[in-house]
Image (cartoon, rainbow, N blue to C red; front, side, top):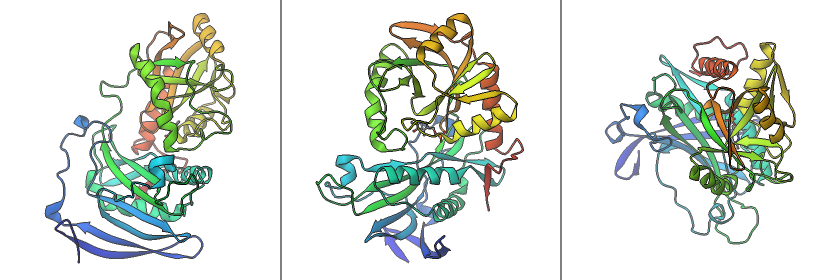
Length: 378
Ligand SMILES: *Cc1c(COP(=O)(O)O)cnc(C)c1O
């Protein structure tokens, strides 16, 4: 038995054999029954990312190896005020969701998230995690927190794997110590008022990422850098920013923290992955689904001029964003250089709606998954 905040915890150790044959142990220290939080009765009332489950997973990196893997009580971190992540943003994260289908908990392409996590780690000069071990620990944690996975349609348990540089040192150089952890937060459907179109502000002033920068990594600093453009958008009543390229302010990049798609007549196009754009797992799934339906799905450069002219001529039929948070967001209006453009009728297009229904159906296990995209826990 171990003692934390006056709470007795149930202890255990689970062994895991990593890909390289290296054995790793996960210590399990559970919160006692009477110290557990009350699970909110109505997930629809929880503002995104404000409520966390009883447990979290964490492990440390020191002396060139990962150690102290443990599932333990959700608790504050203890960090030196000089920890490198706090000053120079050497930090990365992932965003994924667990869905409930009866008693079964489902994950959507989770191995992709850990692959991308390791890509982000490489870009930020951080150590990689064994993706098999990372998935194993996530499954273990989800089994423990199963009761927290909401069963209201469209709701889920949001999963946030995170890595931060923890070495106490003010020199600008890669940390020698890191903390990796996973926290879980029950979230309602993204669209509270039902699936509905959003208004997007095209920023021709600020940019998200430049070639050679960190745009293709899910790195903390990218999101701090994106906040100011959002304030311009909200001033004119718009919710999200559509980013243009840093060099010419001409080519579409992303919408907020989601990928963008434009449907022109018989073609559905999305910007190519050129290093400034995040390689979305939802984006990849959308491309696969469209191809299977026999639709023309392309990855290419799309200029803002082509989109605005297409809106005027009627060639642009739909615009939508894709990402784990909202899955698919229909775009009803664009604001560009002081002028508002209405996309199609301003309503949800057929392709947008079909993709939303198909993807959410697959993720919740209601639509047969022929791609091996859905992983069930147990
Ligand atoms: C997370 C993210 C996306 C969407 O990726 P998914 O894997 O589909 O959730 C797109 N753009 C940015 C900048 C992101 O951070």
